[in-house]
Image (cartoon, rainbow, N blue to C red):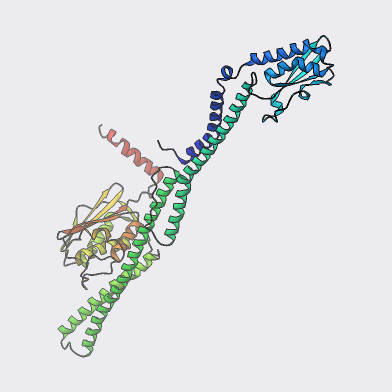
Length: 481
């Protein structure tokens, strides 16, 4: 199970708070577990207080003579290594053993930890109070306090040590899993800014940072691919502009040569002149097609290629388009296969005819002698396919034929080569109508281009649409009667 960044940070904060406390408590519990066995118990302390009370009570008569009273209580003081102060009921000091004892130096423990108070009722002086002060914690019953203090101090040291270790550990972990990846992302960003799109960040965890880095790498990859495609497009564009310039110059040179031949009287008879005129017209048509393609593509690039849609009947439209194509290509066996569907289409008739003309023209241009057009209705779309028996398209060229300025014909024949813009414009027109276009081909066998156009349904009124729905729904039931 892989934890995300947020659960890990929450776990880090909780562990920093809880683990030092738990470690301190465990240490204190383990260290002080043997206090009763090793350092005495509360009975020893009660015994001390009882002995102090009885000793003071028995010798209360000597309190007026401190030296003599000290001699009486000194065995008790030496036994427990303590100092003793006695106060009257009003709180006035009566006796202080420190004046008679030899001091061994200052204790490491503060006085408030070493003092105990006890009240005494005597026959001689009535109510008295005594203050007992332990000189060390090495003698019973004070050893248990030493053990407890050591346990508390040890627990604090252990807790602080665990806290410091956890802070260092989590600092290292967060630095490794958060700060270092962020540093890598920053470095990768600088590399991308500098133009190095091959710099990949490697991070295997599937947490928030991992998903971010995965998105960054994906963005870098797409950016690299986009730039490469743009560079390829620009390179093809430059090459194609140079090629189109040559394409324009060639028919112009031919036209100029034939016109000069007519002016010089080389064509002396009418048959020769007619031949010259036909060549000039052919070259002029070629120029016209080149200029039309460039003009259309310039509008396409500027997104100014207008699409003026109107409602048409599919059967009438495709019948008219087919007859028009037959007139334009009389030397080709152009066949319309199957019946035409009669449905409503919302299309730009001129643009769709341009698409069909372009596809038929390409089929003829690349050796098609028989062209079959087929129109059908499939799943809310009208589908038209144009199939030829021409040269076909190589598999390596097929994915790019709809790209602008792409020409699969490497020989660049002046007769068959075009601008490489026709199919790009065709794709734009079809997609502007909400349809799709694709092609399949086999070299030496032929090609088939297929495009779709959506049916028009918005012209049906709401009541008519509801009626049609119920008719379609219940018609099978009524047909049984």
